[in-house]
Image (cartoon, rainbow, N blue to C red; front, side):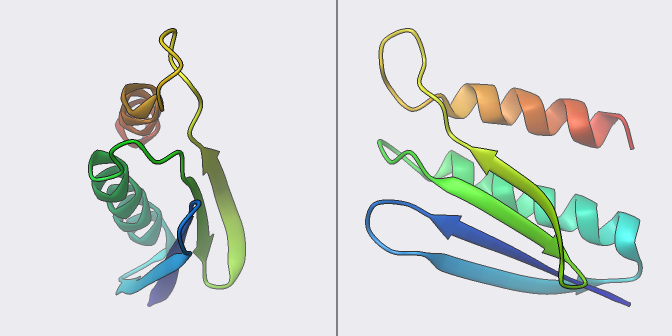
Length: 87
């Protein structure tokens, strides 16, 4: 069993979400799905997502800005899709 944690840091307050999966590959996919859900709900925030698997830092994903100067949530969604498709 692997334990994953996703921490969201934004201008308001950090939040952590923890879950468990049958192994590290499943934990990575579950954690990235959690990032995807948080990203979809981020609105005008520009959060940074930190993922750990079994206590090991695995990913740090920061929200950039799009050409209009707004948080680029679509860019993160595309990145996550490419990562999960490669598994």
